[in-house]
Structure formats: structure tokens, C-alpha cells
Length: 328
Image (cartoon, rainbow, N blue to C red; front, side):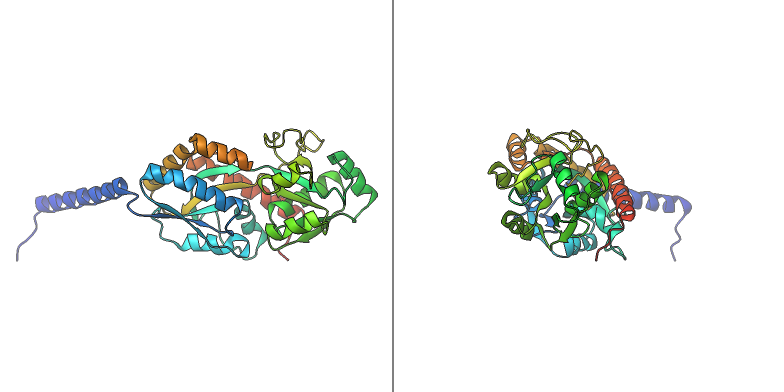
């Protein structure tokens, strides 16, 4: 029998380490070597879907690989998000997360997923103003002050739609009730698409909508935009004040969109993806398309998205607890 000496063992160990490092380096250099999939956990045609397709096209040119969008809608986004969490953590499957991703862990018991532990942030895509819109045939108010006065004169008579319990629209209703000291009846729907028709038809009175979805109706005069729940006015509707300008500085709601990968995805792959999407965001064509949709383009580091998610999750958890919001 041939014995391995101490010197030979060191040589073999060194060779093995060098081999592993070489393989890891080759993997990092070759990523991506095939098509990347972005799971959008919402129906086709919505803002997350549109944004994923716009930026995917440009980022694919940066990565020299195709990027495809796969819609996996259902359960308020949980079906698609859970599917992404179960995917192989190699950087080839991403998920377009939105505001509800930070809500679900606090709203549902048990939580359907943990956005902070099951995912690795890639890049913040953008934010959209949340705008309070009313049906002018139902609500005569044209300003927030007039609306609050009308609500106080008609306690409990105003009904507000949301696209689902715990979404940004529902959170907006609860915040406004608390800040203005008014009573509003909450009517949860099963999706934003259903809300639009009933709001325009007068079956519901008001809605906290993502600006891109209601922009055309606002400009056509079919809806009144009273205020945006953001720090600054929106360039898309510059005449509409912020809630802070209307006297309610705590009314801040930030519907957001961000790309995440399953936890454990190699950091070098995350870095390549982050660089590609940030490069895409600098493209004038993408910037114009985002602006036309009323979306404020973001970008930045993956750590910046991680910090934002941590902050947003904590803030929403407090709001849900204080207002006793449940998933029922």
C-alpha cells in the first residue's frame, strides 16, 4: 500500500483548493450562461408586469442573455413569491416584489413568506405616488380640506375601495382615518382591476390608487385627484399637492417595486445583475417610459434595497398592529 506523506498531503490539499477556486471563478465569469426569468406575482398588464418587461429588454442587452417575464398571479402575490423562494438560488430566477411583500409577513398568520430571510435584494426598480382619487359625482370635494369637512359632516357615509386587505390602498384608508379623525367604510376588492370600474361607475366613492393606473382618468376629469401621499409632488400631475402641503405630513405611502433573488444566490451574481439593471435605468428610452407611466425610477445598490425593505416592513408592522388590521 502506498502511503501519502505530509508533504504530498499538503500538495494535494493545495491543488484541491486551487481547483475549487478555479471552478468558482469560472462560474462567476460565465454568469449568466442562459435565460433569466423574472417572476411577476401579479396579472399581466399591471404596473409590475409592464416595468419588468421594459427593463428586462434593456438589461438583457447588458447581460448578453435573454430575460423572460413569467406571470404567476394569485393570493395577493403570495403564489408567485413563494414559487420564487423555492427556486434554485443561482441568479437565474428573480421576482418582482411590490408594496404587499412588506405587508404579508405582518398581516397573515402564519406568514406566507419572510421577505427579509428568504430573499436576497437585487435592485430597487422604482416607486410610484399613491394618489387619493374620488368620484366627482359622489364626492363634491376638490381638496383634502374639503374632503375631510365633507367626511365629518357625513360620518360613515363615504365608502373607500381597496384592491385587497393590507395593500397600499387599505393602508392609506386607515392612515387617513387616523390622521384626519374621520370615519370611512372600507370595501376590499380582490384586485385593482375590479376597483377601477366601480370607482368610475360610482359604486364606490374613493380610492388610494397607484398614479400610473388612474392617470388617464384624472387627466380626463373622470376622477378628482386630491393629494399624493409622497414627499414631493408628481411631475405627472404637478398641480396636485402632497398630503403634507394639505396639512397631513404623516400621510406617506410609498408603493414600490424591487427585484429580488432567492436567499443564498451568489453575491457575485447579484452584483452582475445589479450592475446590468442600473445600466438599463440610465437608458433615455427607459427613463421616458417610466416617466410616462408616472413611475419614479430608482436603481442603487442591493444593500439600499435591503435597508428599505427592513424599514418598510417595520413601519407597516407597527401600522397594522396599531389599527388592528386583519386579513379577514
